[in-house]
Image (cartoon, rainbow, N blue to C red; front, top):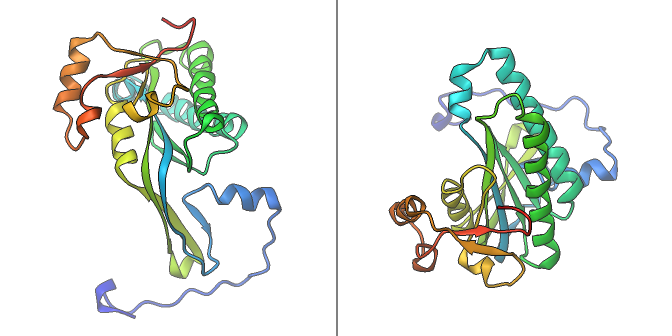
Length: 237
């Protein structure tokens, strides 16, 4: 009991501690924000992690212009299919978290295999939403950012719930969330560090508006303020 929590609190006990989960379910939990409490708390620094941040463009306009049932139907289809895409094509990822009409997917290391997975997730989901999910709502589109940088991974106890919570913080998260705002529909912005790997085809944006927006962003390293770098796969304009 603590006055900080506003007075007395009754401890909650777990009636059945014999719940069994198969190995695939346990492995899946290791990639999610919430996991089973095991009295082990990670505190790791990943010097060269890979972060994919995706977001739906014009979603606020969609919310204002459509009925509740249409909003529920689309966001459920969007998130459930996105998770399926990540689990199928981003199998090696370390973590993923839904964020409303967007998501963050993290790989603890930037290497050729993980970059290929991240790009496959993005390319596959772009094709899906354009050809199927957003076909009835042409104003909607998917965009994002893919960056390589340092991240801190940590876990804390959720106490009475018998669960623990994990998350990541770091410049890489902040950078991905800021850069994705510069991407137009179907675009993926990459940072300078990732472009130097030679594993991502890219081009510099010639949009003056994008450059102006980039220069107005706060909390970026100098090298990340210079140019808006766009993923440029063969065959995509």
